[in-house]
Image (cartoon, rainbow, N blue to C red):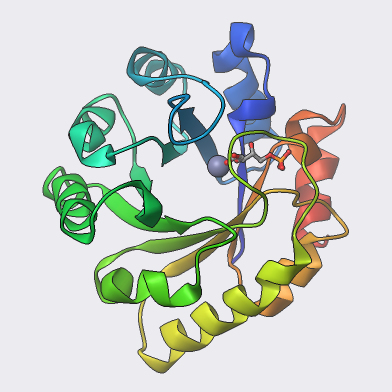
Length: 217
Ligand code: DX5
Ligand code: ZN
C-alpha cells in the first residue's frame, strides 16, 4: 500500500496542530517532519520543542527527516519528543556514527531509516539496507520545499527497489522532493512506496482531493 506523507515544511507553522489534523482528515497516512540545522542544509526549520508540541496535537505517525549534521547527537531526543520514525542522511557523519544513530533510534523502539542526497549513489545505502525500516531517496537538493523533481533519481529508486525485493526485506522506499500528480506515478512505477509531498498537499485548498490524486484515485 502506498503511504502519503505530507511535509509540514509547506504548512502554516503558526497553526501546526490544526494543519496536522486537517491532512489526517484529508486521508494522509503519515506526517513528514523536516528538521534543518542551517549547517547540513542552507535553511533552518524546526526542532525538538516544536516536535514535542506537534506530538501532543496529533496521533498521526510522525516521520522525522533529520537534515542535520552528526544526527547521532540528537536522534534519541527526537524519539523522546515523539517521533515514530527518524531518518538520517548517510552524508551527515561517518559510517560508524550513522550506525550509532540508527541503533539509538531502534533502542527507543522507533523505526529508523537512511537518506540519500541526489548526488549520493544507491550503493551508499547498502551497509544499512538489512537493518533499516526505510530508505529515503531525495529527488531535490534538501533544504527547501517547492523545487522541481529530479527525474535522474528514478534509476536510483529502481536499483534500491530491486535490492530490497531480491533480499526479501521489509524496508520501505520513500521519495521526497517535487512530488505532485505528474511525478508521483513516475516514482511509484520506479518502486517507491512512500510519497512525501509538501506543496502538492499543504499548498492546495482541497487537501482531500490532493491526497487522493497522489494515490492515483
Ligand atoms: C526538502 C524537504 C522536503 C520538502 C518537500 O528538503 O525534505 O520534505 O518539504 O517539499 P515539496 O513537496 O514541495 O518538494
Ligand atoms: Zn523531507
